Length: 272
Image 1 (spheres, rainbow, N blue to C red):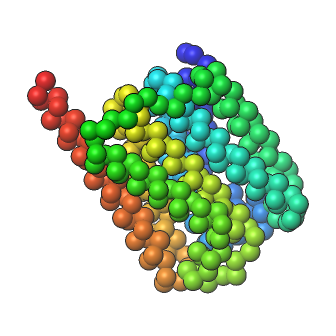
Image 2: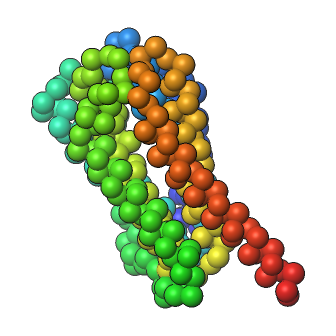
Image 3: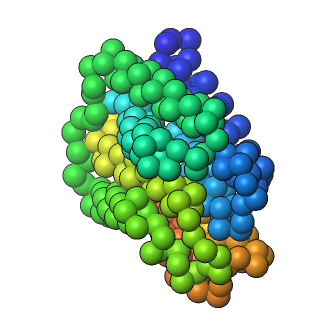
């Protein structure tokens, strides 16, 4: 097993375990991280982050034996949010040092620094290869990949910029910096996920494109499930339908395209 394959294996294992832990035990993480009793808004945001992290483990696992151009997306999808989250950590240290428990904040900081160093080094070894020739004939697929990238950037940027505004009409609790921090982490992960869709346009392997769509499907289903789950908490108002509608649409589009890929693959196999 090569260095990159080994790194992606451990990355996938860590993402799977941490993602599932955040998704199914958000209250434990929130109370420990912020050293206070958290509410249903915290739990929802943490659960969404867990779903994002868990979805990324599929890409890491499936790309262990792929080409360097495909594997580069695994490194970028860790580099981008790690840099953004590191900036958030520095912002907390200077503006609201009591927001996150000191040792927990240090752990986040050193974890982000380690992740940045590791994946930047692996990208350097691979020569920063990002793709080959665009598959121009797949116009419908190219459109959906670009649409996915556009949605990732726009939604992620909104969560990074004004998370309180996005939440204020949907919740019945007073929002503070801890809610903002979690919303911005989720936004950072959304922004990073655009790299999968844009790079998928240039991959040589059709199997790698399938994996990219599978990752988005899992991410959308996880977040949609978190949104529905949050309706059981008393901290949410009846105005959460906007986010639910958005991710229902995103999930349906992802599932339709995954089904199209499956049927087209079966058709090509029969012809052969």
